[in-house]
Length: 566
Ligand code: PRX
Image (cartoon, rainbow, N blue to C red):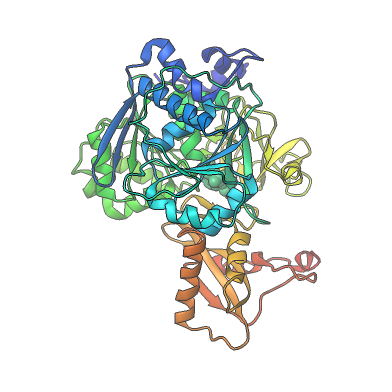
């Protein structure tokens, strides 16, 4: 029996107070994600249960119980307090998927800090943009990332301390401090910061079309939605071993890679290693993973290796599969049935929604290619592109709109109230994604309504790339757009107009690609560069990326006269 039971019955009279009651929360109480994911599970008598089974690319293994999580997150929290970090200050986690990342996340929240997890593949420009915007005080990192963090810090005034979790052998400089989590004296008791529902918790940076990435500000009350969606959609039960292969630098890796599973008292397995099909299957087999949350790009990569490889492993423990981040194509659903004997269940949501909003819950018949139906407690509609009025005719394409409020909706963008206000129209939160709804109420994803590039489930903003391109001495102007890719769905393509005297040859192409990889990240690196004499522009001089994108996808460019007037 699944946790959700009947979807239809759950819709009747749904109230988020179901989650509040299960978490022992009443309006006005203290609510702290760090506490709820560790101390509370111990208070319920499960301190000895395994919380984290960890393994890295070299095969090193570690395991932690919920009591370890409690004590070690206390240790980090107390350490930050000793460093002088005040509640509300931003503490960045810039690490690979090491235990300190997961435990540090809880530790920062326990002392009242705002935790800012950033993907460790970011290089200095991407890191600097985000640390500068958030005026981050402390960066917790690993020795291997210290050179990038040091170079970034030179550009910033806010960062007071860099904390290095594996500093052995490193020459630390002024303003750098070592934290050997397991070597520190264990802090058995720590007074958790008395955060309440609206206290800021996690600050995730997400890319939009215009401007640099925006800081999406979550609050501790998000726990209510993350707890219940984990329980009902991912269906975590007491003896499950759960694997979410997302990095906590992105929202999936925190909402469903830390908060949801641990608030449910579930055991998680974490693999700190890049993609390799045999490695992944061996990991699923070794830890007897029962519930797996993955993404379409990973599934497509596995598909490329075929079903034969799957047969070499005993994956009989797997009982529930879910996917997020990009459109889950029907072939991937059908392939997973063949390869694993069960389909991937699509889940749709965003950094801003904080929790899964449209999905195929267990028991709801899957229509391959559809994202499913709204989670109980979420009112979702397809709304008209211009008027934001709900479109009731099945098959009509519009924007996915969600009726506020719900517990994990972000409460703002950092330093950007206008950007946040613009997300709401006619009483709906507008996702910026296009979809249609069929006669049975299932949602079908159509595409994004903006110029953001979704590469392998990671959003990359064109503005960030174009700004970095402009710093290259040969580049006069540029446009970064999505181009189709069989594995990653989309990759970045840059159209570049060169300054006089530069020749658009292959060497320059490689040089520019590398330039972006080193400044931003491998994700943001254009996979293709096309040198052009000029770029299509509106009358006011704005580059029309949409025209270039349409060309890449072989779609009609449409009426550009309105764009011309921009
Ligand atoms: O365009 C949608 C796509 O990913 C965007 C959200 O990205 P981000 O904020 O980074 O959060 C990713 C993890 C929740 C959406 O606006 N997206 C997400 N899930 C799906 C999806 N596109 C199609 N199908 C999905 N299931």
